[in-house]
Image (cartoon, rainbow, N blue to C red; front, side):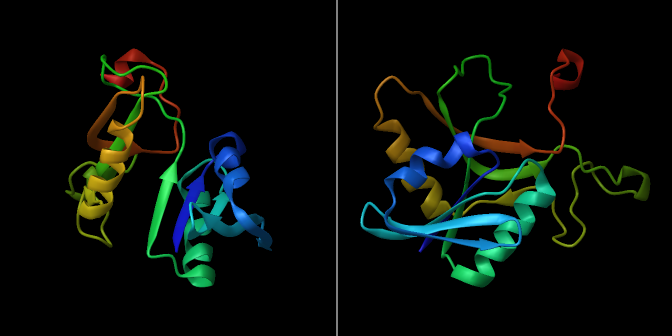
Length: 160
C-alpha cells in the first residue's frame, strides 16, 4: 500500500477522485480515503498545513494502514530560477529550513533525534517518481533537496 499526504484539499482531491472502491475513515481530525489507485492499494489524506499536522497524519496513517511508502505531494515555492509553475520537483532528501539549534553548537537544520540535517528519500522511489515525471508532457522534472518549514517564504532576502 502507498500513502499519499497533501496539506490542502486542492493538492489531493484529484488523486482522491481517481480512487476506486473508495472508503473514508476519519481518525482524529483527518479523513483517510482508502481504495485502489491504478490497481494498487492506496490511502490518501489531507493533513493540514505545517510539519506538526503532517507528522500527526503520517503517524496515524502508518499505525492504521501500514503503507510501505508515504508520498507528500503538493504545491510549493521554488528557489531555482529555471523552474516554472506546474513543474515537478522530486526530493532526493528533505531538510527543515526553520530548524535552528545552532545555539547548542549544532548545524542549522540539525534534527537531534535523527542526528542529521538531510533525511534521505528512498532511492528506488526517487528513481520511479522522477522517471514518471519525466514522461509527462510540458512539465520539467528536477531532482534535489526539498526544504520544508512552518513559514511561507516571500521575502527575497530570506530566500537568498
